[in-house]
Image 1 (tube, rainbow, N blue to C red):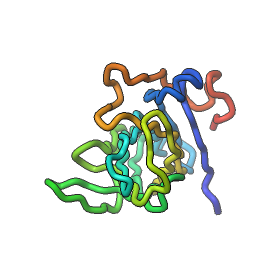
Image 2 (image 1 turned 90 degrees about the horizontal axis):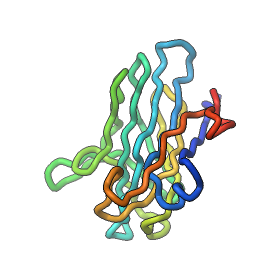
Image 3 (image 1 turned 60 degrees about the horizontal axis):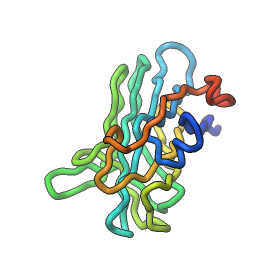
Image 4 (image 1 turned 120 degrees about the vertical axis):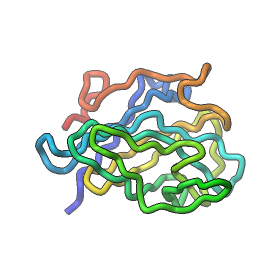
Length: 179
């Protein structure tokens, strides 16, 4: 049985997305109905322009407004044949099995801690473009997020880094992705 798959792209307008808008949020709920399911939102995804053609790192926050926990268990992308969840420890990195996302909490993939690692990209990423990244969870349906590539030192919310309003699935601003 194939789990439902939703791809959600948010932004106030196409110009915001083309400019690398960071106010991106993607939503998914667990496969079961009722108030006990996780309710996940992916917030502020970004990839800094990589210095090396061999790897790229990705960062985001997975927020869970639901009544039960979930776990990010895998990641894949359209631009790299291999993608993993990694954890930094001092000057070393290692692959981890997943990221816990507690009920009414969040899982953070950020610089200097747990993050996404994309190996052997098929092309060099450049500031201003974006790529699709699919997150797979233990309970919830996969979420595909349109992730902007920022400057090497840029972060969401920095001055000059555009962001747009969050748009929820099924809203008038983004029809066709309702539950």
